[in-house]
Length: 372
Image 1 (cartoon, rainbow, N blue to C red):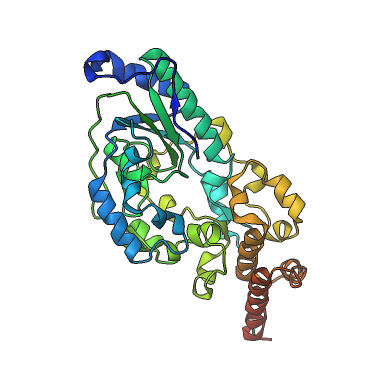
Image 2 (spheres, rainbow, N blue to C red):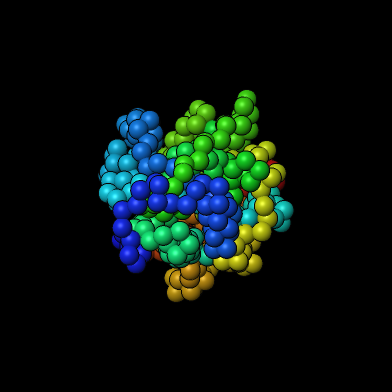
């Protein structure tokens, strides 16, 4: 985890020592845009109501095997506990781009794999951490020295509630943040700072009566508006989950081999989402609608090489093969598909073998049901 930093000559600052809000706000936005961020908001670090909701969610076990979410409990709702000098949280948005029709179209071709849009480019963690540090230093030069600490997803703070309070958007019924006029295809990052900046007001929830994300979810993971059971979510099952994928969800996963975008693809607010991501997040063409059988044939060194700098590495090679086995089990039966699975039937890892056996069983059962 990154450590707190202090820009040169940083000392405690009183609100009266800062420039007035009128010239300051446009300056901050201009600096943020220059560093690649599409929006910025400012809020206080405390989230008492969200702490209660987090505890209730954890008590229901909806976090599955993500024990790190429970590890720090209510402290996650107190960003200032990770950097005691925190006065404000600067929340930023970085767009990764709206999926192209050809990418979305791969969902209709079950012999090909679908990878969540956010994972098609470079892994956002390192990219955004560098940009946030540079942004914080730039603010120190433009406004005044300050102490700060940056977070990008991996830190134990509630980034979506902070972004909501900072006015970057509202948390939709699918539990993703939705930006007014910007949709939801973006990453979030935070700067905890000693600068006592003016805070932004939150925006109104515009989900209304829409239930599209709830109805489209293949595994019914959105159990009610604004509540997600991660144990049913394809993103969790194919990425965060390190063990076997429950059999009852395998057919519903289809050809999604890393994450799922269904709730975002159906969201009417994403008609406003931009298509131009930061250059670092531009999709790698070889990951757009790749042939499942080809991916299943990668060796571990090939996997390491082809996923260098990518979020796809989060599954590890065994998780990658597990996901591919499920997708191949859902693909139309062909010699190519069957050969790809059979070549992995003796893989050393028992979890991978079990998923391969399940996939071959699916094809066997289908062949028995086919007349003639």
